[in-house]
Image 1 (cartoon, one colour):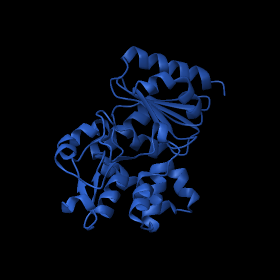
Image 2 (tube, rainbow, N blue to C red; image 1 turned 45 degrees about the horizontal axis):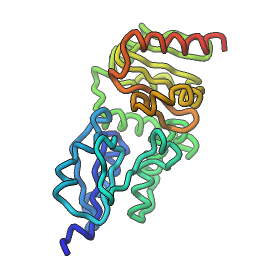
Image 3 (tube, one colour; image 1 turned 180 degrees about the vertical axis):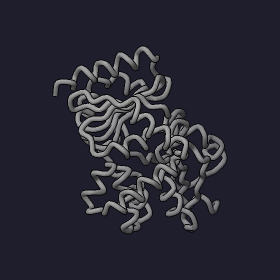
Length: 256
């Protein structure tokens, strides 16, 4: 028997703090083979690993937060917690279960951050310092630059509108996490550019129902629990469509 047949092949998805933590957990294990294409969230497709799928035989193949744009092999197992897998634990927790390992305190906080953002870390009694450090490391892992941090601050200063219980920010950067982190806590937050939008907080579940067709068409994605997030794929909608959506959400909440 080929020695690789007794191992699990793990294919890494888009980089964030959780994905880098998963990588650290997997590397060096005798029962794992790890493949890493250093993907971003927007290009984390299973097809990026097509050569690995064609040329190697493993006991199980685990795709971690990969969009299945090609048909997976029969021994493929999906590890995800977005869209129709929104009910699942974080990817880090799922990998830990596969490996039979227990998460340490830092890993538990990283899993909570990815699953339910700052609120989930607070439920674990995370200190302000722990939360700030994890959010900083997560932005760094996502590739957020110092310039993008500054653009986030400028977007808040110049382009923030309060409409009832809703905060709207037109962002000068495609990186929304530094804006979210600076504005937390919020009840409802909508960030957008001419190419994409993201809604965070209360009302996310209702938007999932309203946009079910767009979700089925893989133009819209969601995650993070009942008060998590929902957003559109970059360039999935026109500038005019995005402006229409922003105005509709504004009208929904401006008197609440």
